[in-house]
Image (cartoon, rainbow, N blue to C red):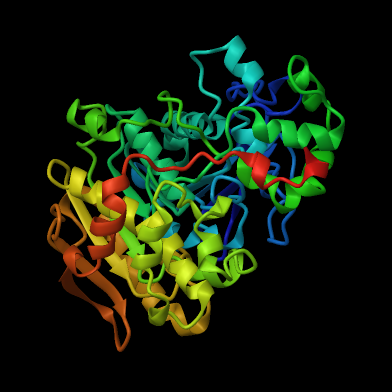
Length: 479
């Protein structure tokens, strides 16, 4: 039994509930193990966030990092029964993030009759080691542990949410950025899922990210912490502290080398053929959203120091553009169209990671799946997060408005959000938060926004993502 607390709206809140055992010690680089059962009569305090999964050291306001991190949080209307459930997965490029982030509180859902759940997964080297030793020992097993962590969390939620007033037969799964990628992996890996609906904000299963070849990332980290390559590497690395892995080169650069690999178990190379073979949850109503300038955050802030020269940027590890010829990209992004090189690079990042994967799968899925699409006119990726939790005062009215229509859709996904279903090539697209008319939803078509995706990116799918050899980007002293 878990003891939570009541928030200022009277919602029942339970924080830090474990859905799996610790991922430390012998469980480092194993699939999530069952959490030990509570003894009868045991009461556990669930009044503070559990640990955040290990990742690069961050200045974000997350809970402390520890490998005993597979925990979840529940916000529920007090005394509610059989209520719809919204499960939310945070973003962070598969290498960072936490359900303890203050942006992801669920009170704005619970006060409107929806049970809100958030949870952690492993990140970076702890979640996707791409180890030669593991591959040799278990050739038919996935090393994409952060994807299987999602499966474990969703299983726990389905089995236990009734105790918090939720309806296990009415669960909607949504996420933003790499959280949206996780939602999509779930749909592809569970074609017969019980989900009532799915909500993808900005990305999907072919949105990347890039990763390093087999064992190269581990070899870089091993060289820093005194572990060997080859046999015995993992046994040695399991004894290395989180802090020793986090520091030095890993913290600044190597953390991005470790993201889920294409293993055709949990992340696939043949999505189109899988879709036509029925290996996808096409029965689940799907809401897909994108912001109007997804790449701005990455061009101006996240990768500002790496993208000041476009010709260099398109071959950078983080650009995710190595599968497209340089001359094609240089021609597609005319420097005269951008105020700075960072803006130009940010536009390419937004296309590669967000717009064009979304457009590609929208063409595929909307022919068979009930799908609705919108474009949110915020300035950058994360701009639509007020949909979940109202932030600064100037966005409060719009945030509440968007939250209202999202909750209405969560309560009845099959009915749609109030506009026409999407269709391939150039179908209906809701325009949300348009300046000077923020509280209206007007209609456009996807064809007004996808010409570069069709001309530049679509011919190269499904080659994406680019697998990048590290030898030309890792300083010699870190090898």
